[in-house]
Length: 304
Image (tube, rainbow, N blue to C red; front, side, top):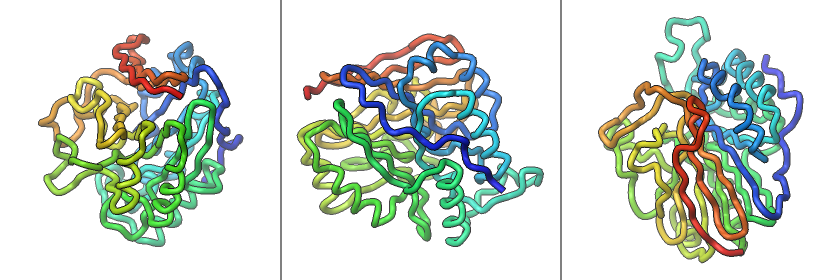
C-alpha cells in the first residue's frame, strides 16, 4: 500500500520580477546522496518552486521507494510539482528484498504500466499526468512519460501530444518540463546504451512544425540521460528554431561525463541546475551540493 503525500503539489508562484525554479531529476531514491542535498539548506531555501523531473524512485516504484520519496519531499519543505519518468511505470517490478532487485529491466505489461501510472498520480495527489500554469514570466508545461503499450520508453501519448499543441499558442516564453530530452532536427551527439536508442521525445508533423516556428523561446528541461556538468552536451543548445534543450544533471552521483560513456558511471559529486527567470531572460545555474557553491552560469536572453 502506498500512502499519498500529506500535502498536494503547489500551483506555480506568481512572481513578477524573478522566479527561481529548482529541478531534481533522476534521484532514484532511496540513495545516500540525498543527505548532501538536504544539508545544503541555504541553497534549497532560495528556490521558489521545486520540479521533480522524473525517476524519483530508484527502480520500479515499490512502496519502499515511494516511502523514501515521501521522506525527501517532506524534508525539503518547498512548493513543488512532479512529472513521471520511465522508472515510475515502465519496468516490471521485483521485490525490494529479491536478489533480482535493480538487476532486471523487463518491460512491464500494459496493465501493470497503467497501474503504476495510477500509483504515481495517487502518491503525488495529482489529477492529471500533464498540466500547465501561466505566470508573468512564462508558461510552464509539465509532461509525464505515459505511452502505455510502446516499446520505446521515451514516448508521450497521442492525447498528451494533442494537448501540448494547444499549449504552444502563447506569446510568453515556454518552459517545458519532461523527463526525456527533445529531438527536433538532430539526434543527441552521444550514444545512449546502443546505436538504436535516441532516448528522446521525437515530435512529428504539425507539432514539430509549430515548435520550430515559435518566435518566442521554448526551453525544454529534461533529465533521463544522466549528464555530468562536464559533459559536452550540458551547456544549453538549440534543438531547432528557437527551441532550447536544457539538460539537468542527475541528482545521485551516477552519470555520463564524456561522449564515450554509453552508460552512466559513478562519480564524486551531486549537482543541481537552478533556473533564475526574470523579465529579460534566464540564468541556468549549476550548483555543487558537495562544495555548496555555484560552479557554472549560462545566460539566455529574451524580452517580455
